[in-house]
Image 1 (spheres, rainbow, N blue to C red):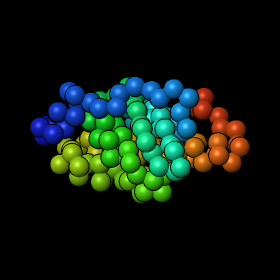
Image 2: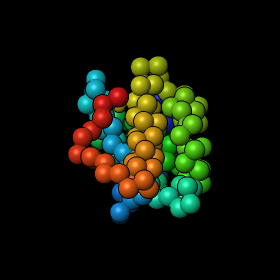
Image 3: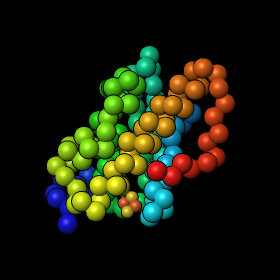
Length: 134
Ligand code: FES
């Protein structure tokens, strides 16, 4: 079902965990399967210098979380906002069609973490207790 690159990313995920006192954090869930992904970012001068993830989910969700966090490290926040799930899937050389929706979590969690970063910069309070289902 999964190609070797996806299996490797699942078996040896990078950037697992949580950044303490992150500059941005985002948690999203998949309304159909209930899987949840949380991404925390360290951002310096609008550049993502570190990214970590915690995913309660399937192999595709874990592989795409790992790959997406690797991809955004070194990007500016504007560049990271343009990262699509399709680009992450391409980096993994494909996912089975029925697992494409799992990759949406990574894109959305990164976007949410960047929104959180921008809101904090503007001094706004953000309610992080809610999981946004996508
Ligand atoms: Fe839920 Fe993959 S089946 S994210």
